[in-house]
Structures are given as structure tokens and as C-alpha cells.
Image (cartoon, rainbow, N blue to C red; front, side, top):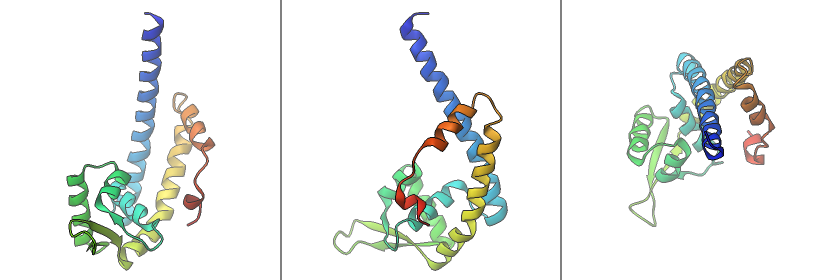
Length: 154
């Protein structure tokens, strides 16, 4: 195996490690959020993204980026959350093709109840991941990241 092949293998190993950590975190969050609040991780992510807008709304494409979903998957997800009266869609006054999404009071209340569950499950899953030698350096790196000031203000 040449140097270039070694570099590819290192990157591939890093990617597999990241995927393993993501899978562990996603599973823990899904279990906790479903059990306590009837929310999936991606539903929580939508509510959280909208909740961080400080009274503003988001375009559907922005929400798709925030959830890492396709446009059509985001539309279906928003429809389900709208059916549960957790968010609402608003037509843009300037551009009839534009659709905004924002939390309802019920959505904001559910988000506030779910946030401590999410945060505790995430903390526990990260702590558990540090017990796995392959994942520990990645968890340590995550703890070393600085967060934007807006994310720290809840």
C-alpha cells in the first residue's frame, strides 16, 4: 500500500468513526425523545431550528438545510408537524412562491419541554461514547469546539 493509499484509508477510518458516533448519538436521542415527548430526532431538529429564530420564521429551503433533508422530505415533515399544530406555514407577501414556517405556541411549549431531555440524552450518549477507545478522541474534539454565542443563549 502506497502513501496515497494510506491517506485514503486514514480518511475512510475517520469517516467510519464519525458515522459510528453519529449513529450512537442519533439512536440515544431518538429513544429518549420518542419515549418522553413523542418526537423523532429530526422533528426535534425542526422545532429547535425554528425556536432559535427569535420570533422570526424560516423558508422551507433553510429548514431543509438545517435538517439535512431533501426539499420533498422537509415538506412532508412540516406537514406532519403542522397536522400536530406544532408549526404553521405562512405565504411570503412579496413572493407568492415563498413559504415560511414558524413555531406555534404549542410547538414552542413542546420544544421547551423536550430540550432538557435532548440535552441530557446527548450528554449521556457522549459520556458513554468516551468509553469506546475509537470514539473517545472524536468526543474530545467535539467538546473542544467553541459554540456560537447564539447557541449558548437559550
